[in-house]
Image (cartoon, rainbow, N blue to C red; front, side, top):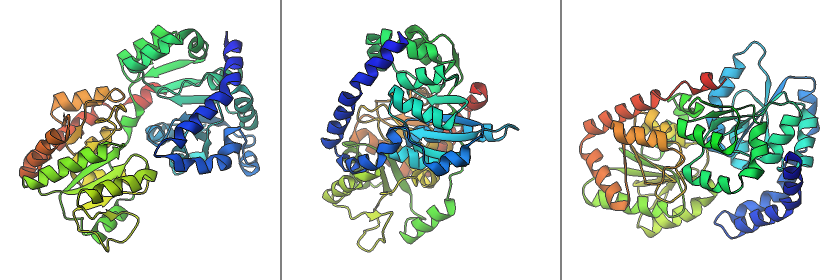
Length: 420
């Protein structure tokens, strides 16, 4: 059956690739298409000669994560592996260019690149070139050809921080016979929660353990704190109460802006910091802010024409250093049906966390924060504005909720050691 899956995926690969290109061409992220030709060698599994020479004869482990957020979740795993006497050299792949850039910045990563296309020739070429000992994938990166080829090569592939929403489970059940060979090739599925683990077991994964999410083992102290403080000081925002809305998607910037303007009209003394999930969408976010009557400063430029009410973060990698400066935080991908992004970064920073109803990817931390008093679920601009007014009028209350958020987030730690 595994051979049939490999053949089927190889045959369908051109159609899938064409579909991906078309989807990007019709999306706000169409500018990324310009990079396709430059990315092609990596997508085909090619490794540069200098990297081959650097890693020749070394113990190599291959880690894979979908994008920048999942890459960040592997940072504690990298630190734990680096502490071993026989620490391997780490090659990290990602599905996105942003993920590759994030991986390249992590300590302990010897080589970061885009993942080879999930077809047997591309994956086999990559494996034969680097001869890795292990493959660790994350979350729901169930690439059949990659997993099966890695298993046949003796890499004992494992899935860390494994998650599967009820919605995804319903879709995967429709193709369960095709997915089963890949699941059976996994040496272990280290699931985030018991329900996640049950769904993987139901689909045919032979060994499932519940370990949690290594992303929660990341420290609260952000990187480049001094740089962030200096930039905020330059923009005149270092001593202002900040409402930070991070990882927002199309449609969410309008909700955040409406809530911010409503809260200000009701007396809330906040400055807005908006950080879209994808930096290439900064132009759309800037347009929305200006249409709302604001003159935002841009992180990447001087604040010559800004009015001091708003900052638009138009570069990647800044948000973790900003969360501790917030009095209130909103995490995107939750008002629109994306499934949510990392609630624990602002929570570990001691900030009250606000999020929308769509939390399928982050249900455990969302429920803990909501039920434990570390944050609130909001449904629209009006309910978000109400919480902002409350937190603005009562700084002591905001500090208390933020402290509870930190306490709840710290209780989720320990997944890294359990998984390893």
